[in-house]
Amino acid sequence: MVQDSGVTPSYATDGSPPPSLPVVPASAGTLSDGVDEDVDVLFHLGLRVPRSHGNGRCPPGTDDAVGLFGAVTHAVLCGSASRARALAAAFAGPAGEGLDDFTRTDRYALFRTAGGRVVVASHGIGRPSVSVVLNELTKLFRYARAGNSQVTKDAESSGEGVDCGTVNLPPVTYYRVGTCGGIGVPVGTLVLTSRVVDGQLRGEATSTVLGVRRSEPAVFDEHVVAALAAYAQTEDWGGGGKADGRAGAPEAGSRVVVGTTATLDGFYEEQGRMDGASCSFDDARRTAWLRSAYDAGVRNFEMEGLEFASFTHRHGIPAAMACVALINRLDGDQVTSPPAKIAACEADLIRLIVGFVRHRLEGEAAGATEARAS
Image 1 (cartoon, rainbow, N blue to C red):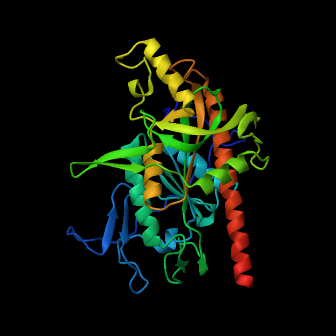
Image 2 (image 1 turned 90 degrees about the vertical axis):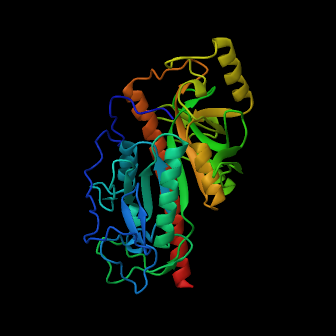
Image 3 (image 1 turned 30 degrees about the horizontal axis):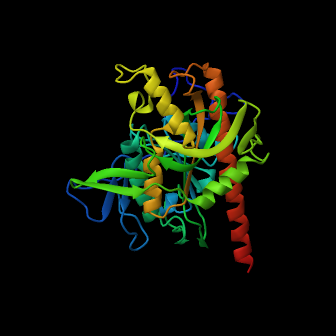
């Protein structure tokens, strides 16, 4: 993943900064220093969640997961806190209505937006960092009974809750969006991931658990990927970028391609860069490796997708990933585009994912209306 530039861009399409957000404080109350088996501490998110509601009320000092997150059907993850805030603001109203800031720690940003139907969170850089937030978000949604379950807001729960009535909600769909290094694609290209591989072009994620090496498939939900690719070919999101790359979004000159993403465990040598603190290969070897990746269908490099795909596949979570290329790695190592160009590229990516999720929310609302009428 390409880190943010030193200049903080404005992600709003009209050039204005995102509105200031109300910060939702931690619940009042004090818990003992001992371990409370009825409470799950989601440490990195800064939330304390009851494992069950029991009588429908939350114990003092805990967060009402059902009331706060029970209506969620979509979760959008991205690298930085500033991009998460921009994404959340893009889902909200012009004055930021329907948007709440649940950020409790300096590790991850967490927002609830779109009237409680969408959560946006930052995940940091690299597989370990995204693994942490995926685990804690997934547990949070389970406690909230979000997605594919009967959700009813307790009438006496906190006024911060979202009244979603009693309705069968679809499973929570996860999306990862971010910046990347393109492989044989121009700057500004939106790469929709059809397949994820590692640095050896293997489509599996490996990890060590209790001293044992484990491998598992890294696969995205083909239906979500196909739906996102189809949506990217329409004019609905303001781009009209064709999935074959022949047309693009007007603001940044983006085009859309569907291809393989390679997840590497580092930014410099691991991605074939020669501009790090040291380098163990020459330009001929680097060029041959990059060319072989391109010939194998790889269209971008980043640092989180393998973990994101394997985790969501393991847990049966529908998911997809889209990244915007800030550099064509066949041309060089360093991101040299001016900040305004980078901001425009990121704005295209935000516009695509926000438009797609809104499109799906509209479908969910129409389905709920039909269900109530039948």
